[in-house]
Image (tube, rainbow, N blue to C red; front, side, top):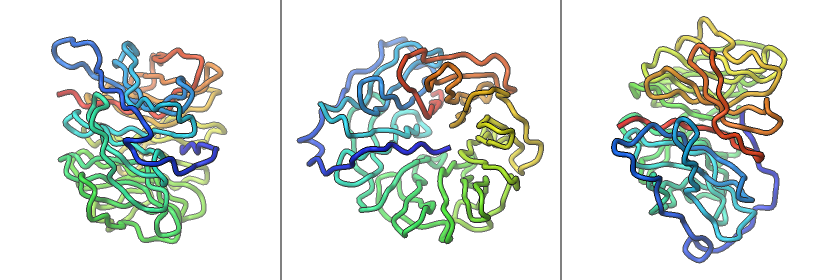
Length: 301
């Protein structure tokens, strides 16, 4: 499920002139624990935060200086946990950046007048898949991890968004409306052999692979409101995990496959929750009066 920020996007100058990036890291604790990156508007504009997997030590990684019209969202961890890719409209256009996991050394990867977002790393860390409207509609692209040589993988008249790379690097899941309603598809990593996995009259979006590649979590409104589902990687055995009257979206698996983080408005505003992978024991991790969205669970080194 994609969330659009509504507001004025303005050219605001160069990176160094417009912002101050926070470079402090969380308190040292020996072996780095699992962490969850997410986006939040708790500081007045949308920024990337990181917290411990239990919700502790929430830290703003991208602190912008009085630029409330700027959004930094959609964090995605590199496989080694050292780098985070994200979307930002800091510069004139809406682009993909990368930064160190402590928020330092932000680098601008894409440079295009269209929208580029929703980054997803290949499991070997050499490439980043992303969605872009540079060809007039939403398409899935892949580029080298340092930005050059973007390639359009989908080349379809429909809108394709939210790529998610399989753990073995051979497949990319995504959602598309090419059959009239949003469905979860999977294709080879070179764009070949796209297959509809969900085949449901409702909307199915935001696929996320489990660490062993056997499952795909996704968001669906097939039960009348948005819920988190999981299915086998071939599309069989879809199961509603959340069964809530609220709205849920943006599932992200822990590296060991035991938990799924997601966002939900069941407490009146958007919060990050984590539950067991069978849907049991949902826990509110953020507990903040403002909105927290799009969790991304870090790999454990």
